Image (cartoon, each protein chain N blue to C red):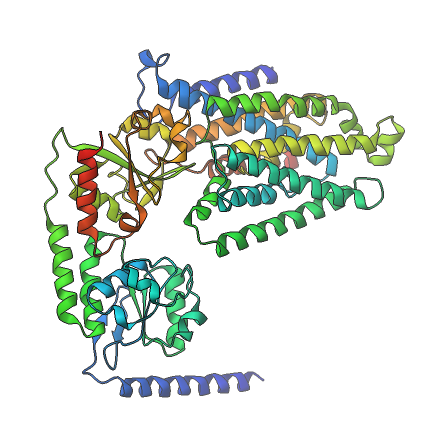
Length: 313
Length: 297
């Protein structure tokens, strides 16, 4: 029943995203309108995919580092992506894909550095070092970014920050296709790790005794979740909060088994972000709100309500 | 311990009061005096002789009223008139490098009124350097600024004459809206799309050139909107401020091609030096925009 409701909510959100918008498109013209086919639909689908990717990445990372505060962007990825984006603008890299590609490369670079740091304490990927290393690498990248922005005399650089704050203005069928071609692999890898991730919740040693290859699991999950997040940042910038809150909401509603947690996190993340983007486009029309503000405005009260029910129950 | 701090505090107050008296004595009533846009009374002992300008518009205005030779510092952005380039730069001015400004030993620093600039002005005043803060977001604010710069530099006649020219430009009644009037949107940034609203001088510039800004209903100088809104408002032209004549890089992107003017390539690429700031050349900018509107297919 809960699953049917979730699927229904996903369809309703996507339908609302198609029907609502600052431009007035009559219902009769819905099927032939370029605004609907070229702007609203790709934008809604992209928001849904990115929300889903962030939800799944957040769920797996929280299980991996066994820390409820883990967020896909906590592990240095947003800092790396920001550095990449600003470098692309500062170096005047040409082409429409320069900025997202550079952000992706920056995020993957930060990920590699954090991964390397995590391996330093012996052969194990230590979750504590992952967290600390992520924060440190992120802070360092952010410092270099700010230095670049304040030293280089280009007004354009300031606008790189606008892009980084996240949003789906750049959504088109091309970005949707890129995400559709890219996301299934890391998503599949994470789905395959659902059972060992359950075992990991018992602790690394018990998980090992129960038959999970903990060392390999940690590496695979970290890389897959980070690569998923890097793709999300490349197509939409840094959208906070989804990856932090969605896993908690899903765990409260559906329990702790990753076999159900991962797909529901995908759908919940997608619904949250697609709905947030629809609100961002419509509530202050003709202006538009940055979507990250809307995710926080919807997400925090829902989160607080669930936390209260959880602690009272 | 507590009494000691109170006592030093008192001593500080006395010193401050003495300093204030001394300053009051030093400024004779005969020197130039104005009220700036931060509601501060700015008095000088004599017309300013060493001026640092921290906004390209002020630099242009100072040259226009014949006080360009008094400039001893400018921002990295001040590139007009060409003579301005001979003046030493004190950095990009966002926020002002107070030390670099003070090192030019100015007797007047002209700043655009903003939070960081007000802080910098306070710091400069503490060093004994007089500062003046002017608003300059709209064309209507050019004339009062020109008038007061004229007073502060002792070139009142030139300042008033520039102010009159600016006033007469602004008071031209914008052509009555007719169906044939061209419409445009100023796109400042593409992702997220940022456009110019009624709070900016560019909105007025478009009106004076006989065009209609389709985002005139947004009161702010600029705002984030969605491509969908731009498409729905269907402007005849996309106006872009750029130093290269090429159409912007987003012109070929599929999501932007939903906007008819983008699809038809109807871009007005306006030189950033002339259109990027309100200043004495506003009339020239209006003429240039009108010419582009008439000649661009």
